[in-house]
Length: 503
Image (cartoon, rainbow, N blue to C red):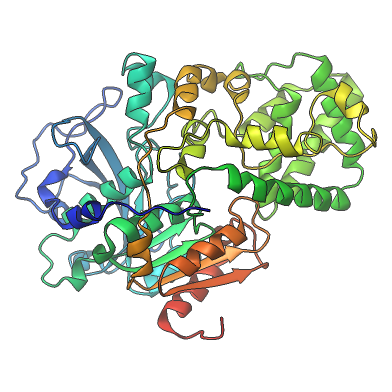
């Protein structure tokens, strides 16, 4: 494994970006009618604006904020902008303390997923953060949610395939972090001390990748950092990731069939049917055997076995009683797969591992074909030719494949862009191992021993590279531990306080 440093000048520039580079957004996209026609004065502090939509949820007051950020933060001659959305949540009763309460910025997993609006902040990590004295900032990372969302429709507005691919190249962790940094400066403007201008960071999965980039680029802007299931491998290409995670997928399949042994026959029946019939989903996508296998991504989450079993049982029952899959079953299967609604999750997925001029070139597909093809076979005639033709058919996990650009309706429209991005060799560096080795920001991270998404061994190497990183490794939770139990954030805050010292 080779690790490369960012040029020192890149980090040195972190203090040279002026708060004026980001402006509160008064521009609405063409598909949305503006709620106000009055221009916003640059002299008004973002936290003092009276035109911001706000409302209460249990435990907090929500402010919905938009910021105009440069598309390319490092090319000042490029005047293109993206509009970034953030939900700002202030604890009830502390609305008049927005200028003094410290912020904790939440970075969502992905890539390509937005932050959801919580129904309440009286539980979960929200309540833990509020009890620690924070106000919350939930950022829709660029390309997701309300932040210049990427879709076939929005990309078509940028012209040729080359132009579209060039545009999407600006939607990686380094750009996301620079958006957050400019937003931090806007929200913390006027605070008197350097300490009060810093923000805490909480990153789930890919959000932890972003935090590690943030620690590399702007360490002086961070008061503390908490990473859940997202300490990234410091690699130049994704191949090693899939060599590590495919065996974990096999183990999870074995555990699934141990819990639901009758699903061995059910899944084989479904796979045989999907090989013989052309099954079209309600949205126009194709439910092929290989796409059905992708339901296994749920195996990496608590409760995932049960959700997949329910779909398997429903589909097998349809085939037994009617000889075909019902609209209801097809709709549920499509709803369990988010690649059409969040296409960045496919077209940019492997690029999050690429540095130093390396292209991804469909690494998961290449590694699967070279080393794990038989284990994850989807073609029925080949399944029957295996040494044990009655063996279970395995599901796949968090991996993307070129054939998805044919099977998923929305991804078909992005096929040329996705193929171009997979061959792109101009990816910049995301991490500075020199800065990470000299890190002084308190960092606490949880890595899940059985994580099917982020390999614990690769994460452990990175945690050892980040000076002062307190890594908690546990088999109590799966990849979605942050959303399952408040014990996860509580334990991480205790690590940061020095309350736990035996790790």
